[in-house]
Image (cartoon, rainbow, N blue to C red):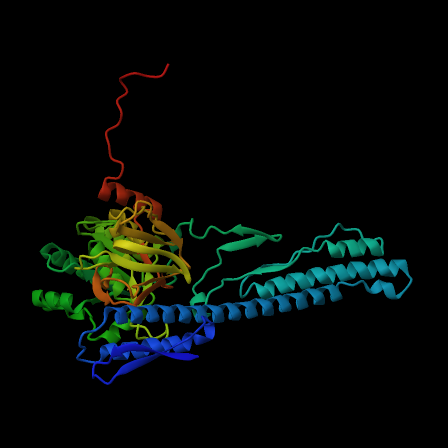
Length: 531
């Protein structure tokens, strides 16, 4: 290790500032480079700086980039080593189980010369093997999906045939959900099944979901669009009907509570909350949520619940109705049918977003997570420069976005901002994340649809000319400085919304009525025809 001196006077005029440098590029020198970069940064942060050399700034940025790259390489190496050790452990465990099965499968008839006794023992041994395979299949299926199937031809007349049958035994396997942590694996459902050792898809996402009440709903939360006289009148009439005819407990927002009490003291039975702590426990009290407004009211109702969300019945009283299939004129018949059940619901997936600052020591030192039902948008804000964003998917580099920004959308939000930016319309029950650029400075940058289990990280590089801004469902705007990152993954708590008919019918009707999708005049029957 040699030491070279940078011929530059420090801000206090005390002579030269020395920087250690390495004659080679070995991985072990990453710590030295990091300290070098830190020393330059401390030198630059001292004030006042007189006649700062531009080359010193560029050198500092280069050292910072190198230190970041080396840090990521070290983390990747450690992750790869841990993964290799885990696969080795699983391989050893599987090999030990196979050896144990082979040991149990040996015929005990070899120890005597009686052929008839040998045949009986072989038959008994095969029966025991089948029972053990079935028991093992039942045991392992509690934590995953597995299959143990023994293939045989039914002939046990000789030792050679028994050995051949043993060799024809089909290998056992187990299917389980793989993820970084055990906690995030609890919300997964078995969507893959097996039959005689063959893997088939169970079709969970392609089936309509039905909700049937095991006990009668007792408590309803009513949420309304603000600043609307017609909504206030409908809300008061609906609450009066639910209390007198259905004997329900009613919760409303504090704002709505004040409006009701200013109208009449009759609404003293209505309940509300006082602080954030009561909101966090709201899902333990409420059986059903009723919204009066548009899609924005549904988004607001979903944001009230940071964990599990009760079923939402949304009445259309706004300008858009992609998530509001019910008409307010027939609210009594609709609520009566929903309270009796069963009802068809749509499970609308939400994304969980974390902002990780550059000053954070690790990825667990994040800000408060934010849940979005439509999309998270990362844009350039008021800056005149293009947004510069580095995107990763499960630690794999995806692309660098250079344009106005990027939209990470759920399938429920595919008909919102993502659609205006050129993204595709997707059925809300399709599990996936839409990756849609905003005005990219590239003709080949097309939108993507990624599976629901991935984790997407969007980072502002250090050489970006300006910071970026992130907004979550159109609100809670946060600035992302150089080195900051936004990590998004699918949340384990979807938003169940009631359907008027079923999920597919409601979706198609919403895009036809709300967007006038593929609306054109029918071709006239009069005119030239093929002969």
